[in-house]
Image 1 (cartoon, one colour):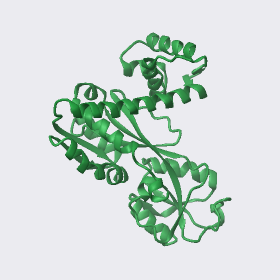
Image 2 (spheres, rainbow, N blue to C red; image 1 turned 135 degrees about the vertical axis):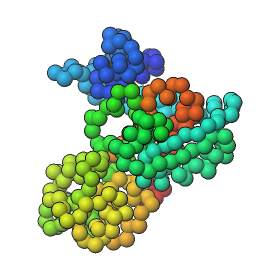
Image 3 (cartoon, rainbow, N blue to C red; image 1 turned 180 degrees about the vertical axis):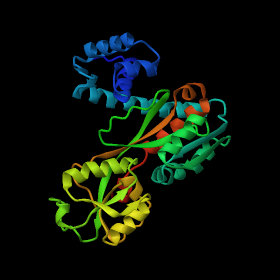
Image 4 (cartoon, helix red, strand yellow; image 1 turned 60 degrees about the vertical axis):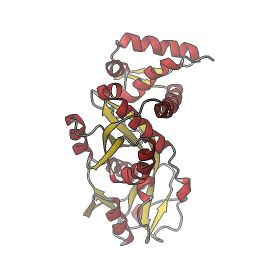
Length: 307
């Protein structure tokens, strides 16, 4: 099997943007050109990669597997570009990255000293805010890129003119009061008499909480609503309810008084780096910063903390 790697970007665009037409718009080519490249990929692999549905096209299991491989290739090329940039002319300028607390504190901030050493003329600024505010900052040019969280299986193509670069997938964890559940083999939260803590409806964790609550049982709290995971863990430790939390958030927070359970079926939180499409291609500074951020995310390991 000989696969032309240049065709993989067409499949990856279909996977990210939800169909052939959306992929064509993003790649600035015709839908026919995308279809032709996908047809050639199918001949090269010997597998059907797309399945027609009333709303358009979806990837088959083989298509999803190849799209994941395409992301691996994209990551490797990003790291290669970053290393090549170190051997060329000095990259200079400033980059402002927006994001949410757990990503900025756990992945981005620890990497800043190394980045300053590698690129002394490249200055990084960070902004922590909610996603709606981050998107406004990106559109206004105040931010160069933003880290965005998505829940398992969430079909949410980036808005027109933006591109999402995958950074990492991390598992959701079930957080319950210490000793509340003696086993994680069979979970029936309705028997605990504890509600799910409420949280902002726009957050990816809210969508994940609703999804898992339907599967595991239990009602949502009307007494407590949290914004930060630090507050959520304090409420769980006080016996006020249960919640989901991403592994990344639990890296830097105190977990006294809670049990963190790894339950099959909780799913994953996907973190992507979103930027304006036109900016990435025209800015070597942003391209270098993107490669560095992907490199930092790829090197992140949950095993180091036992999670």
